[in-house]
Amino acid sequence: MPETLVKELDKLVAAGYFKSRSEAVAEGIRRLLLAYSGAAGSVASLARLYTEGLLERDFEPGTPFEIDVDEARRRILEFFGTDSVDEVVRKVRARA
Image 1 (cartoon, rainbow, N blue to C red):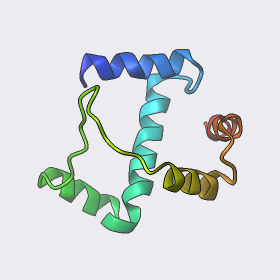
Image 2 (cartoon, rainbow, N blue to C red):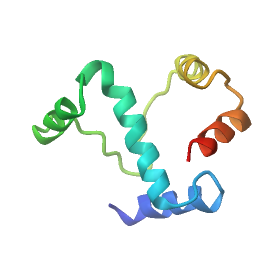
Image 3 (tube, helix red, strand yellow):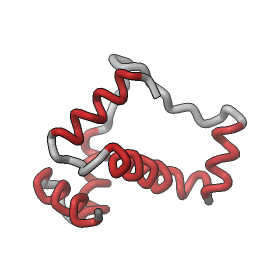
């Protein structure tokens, strides 16, 4: 894992979003699997796509990308039942 990503991960842990690097990585994997569960169908399908080079999501720091804010808010609201940052963080921490 690139050092820049480890440093960013450590910032999230230091800010209290996660208890440890392991918890943050586990959450990232969980979100990845949720995001692709409809498209990939299963963990095995997701692994196959990745190993065949068809699923690449590695961005360098500073890589520009667009986010549909309305769609992101809709998905957060749908998944967590709220779009309040404080409530979402509280619910994520409660799962650990």
